[in-house]
Image 1 (spheres, rainbow, N blue to C red):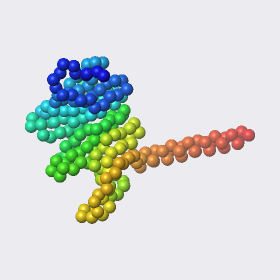
Image 2: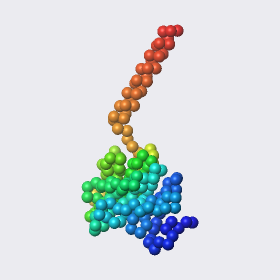
Image 3: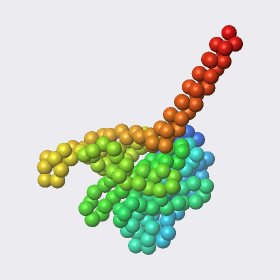
Image 4: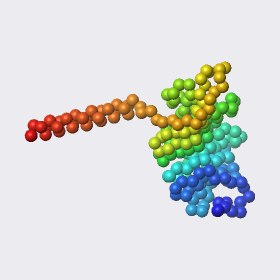
Length: 212
């Protein structure tokens, strides 16, 4: 067992490690990246002073959460890559917290509504953050938080199903797996590729028959 912060009086905790042995977590009030026996503080977003690392991918990209104001009240998810901490923002007036990142840099996590004390899930596609509820194609379900994403884009977390709507039977909470639905443009490209291949194969067959 190795003490990663020997001699420090500050509380520390490790949250994730990749295959290269890079580690992230929280030491004192800030997120850290630990590699080859050296820990680097990642700082915080904006005027915030508090942060924490929650996950790290094979490329050493770290995600987590950080306060963004001097009052240390509002929290946003961050992506740390190449020495830069990027604010991933939020959706609406929610707080955001990143929980997982895959090799391609896709991120999932939680959206928290402090007024209603409710959690939702978010998906970050590399350009923008989405409330996962808005992407669901399964009716009757809401997402109560997202915890993991693999390199195929499959996401796991907590789902809430309300069969009778407000005022009816108590909602049912379940572990859920969310898988991407191909976009129409993707399906069209696949179809076009298949048609092109089929036409090419037919021409070759006819050409072969003609020579025979």
